[in-house]
Length: 503
Image 1 (cartoon, rainbow, N blue to C red):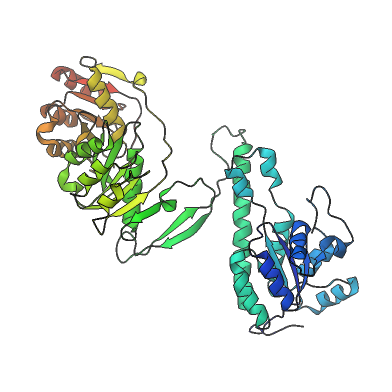
Image 2 (cartoon, rainbow, N blue to C red):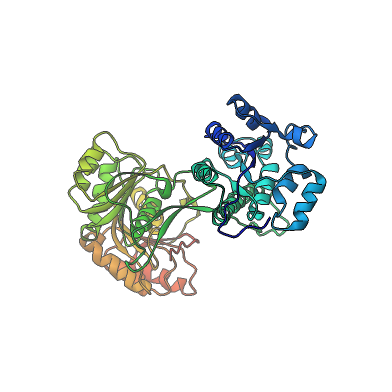
């Protein structure tokens, strides 16, 4: 019979079919003690019976055995009519009685571990077997019919549901909330299956190389203190179908809660550090590097990176691509630093840094490397071929430059940035800023530009400061003007043919 929205719906009969059997024994016993009749499938029914709780097997209910290695168990009218009957409707109640079908008041179901199976590196056939059919059908049916049925999809919900059962049943508000969580459960599952299938079977008929559909899911991991500014709100989400290893899954070893800006800067620093194979350190302030360097060890890399712009490094965010050593920790401890993010910390390094109460120490799995530029595609257009040391510095500068917000100019020496010009609305100002920050260190350094020079005025600023070699993409209609100016100055310049703006 129809019930008021605030009335409780007694739970007299439950269908239980779960892959994750966490808490199942206690759930079954509690439902049995509350007088709930249990119907179950396969291994779930066996587990309930082993717990000493009476249970009816689905095959005894339907009169049809499980078949096809368990692929078909619950796909039967005696199951789905019992879930889908809207008992607010007299016609539905009459049909159930005519067909001899008992309704379910509660469905407890969670799905095969498809995502975990894919992430384990299992074969395609193994992954396909973990694409659940009956489970999502039951979950969606119960969620759709939440005015008459409560759907439970996680062991984390058991305690609240059992409390409701003992209090006389579930309320409509509880069933609506459970239904919403159930649809998230099945939607996430379907997105993961569709994403995996899209990667396994690629439609190349269009020829673009881009997928026709991209799906993703995110789970809220934390609500942050505020957003980019104090009047804004922000939250942290983790990707639902991606390998662990991002900042959202990192472990905080010490310090205050991470802020939105901390995450943004830490992400920028981490990407910059992992652009290199050698021990590298990137120091970031407001999403831009104030120092990037590689060294024989991480302590040397940090010294060189910090020397680029010690003033801006105050209150910065530091990332490394190798574990932090005690020597580096002692150096960092002398400088006010907001965050250090690294793949690990050597024995004693955390203790050194933790003496600073507010510094945030983050341990984050190594980042995946992106594409790598090679010097073989560069074209020498002016000056003598670069020496081995110049080439090494040019390669470093070209790679480090892509971590800088455009328009970007980076001066480097000894595989370390010595001056950075970034975020300007014209390349001339970026050249001036890089030279100004480098000071005397500009003489003999090399320079990288993230995009072409539209005129010769920018390169001339670098030449006047003593820059010995330049690498830039080229591609301007005035490339020849730039080439002629650098030829006249006797400065080496390479064109890469590829730009890497970072807006």
